[in-house]
Length: 78
Ligand SMILES: [Zn+2]
Image 1 (spheres, rainbow, N blue to C red):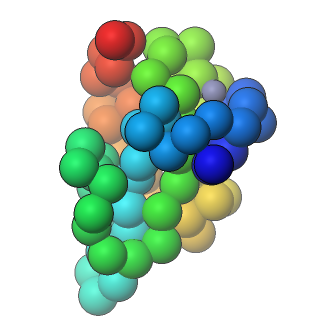
Image 2: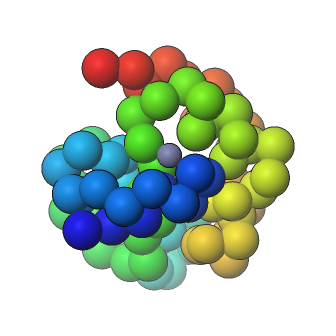
């Protein structure tokens, strides 16, 4: 189980979108297969959580890295 960085909901990993921080470059990538190495953070596949994360910089705080805002403007609704 993992926690959404925006709304704090706990859900199985498979129901969340993973973001991974590359261990060498510290660039944050979206990780659809949930297998990239490095520190990870999760969001619900829900536009509200993406908006909230963008506004509150939740992923930046969770990953301690810059997150490109474009990455959070993608529509991940199922
Ligand atoms: Zn959420």
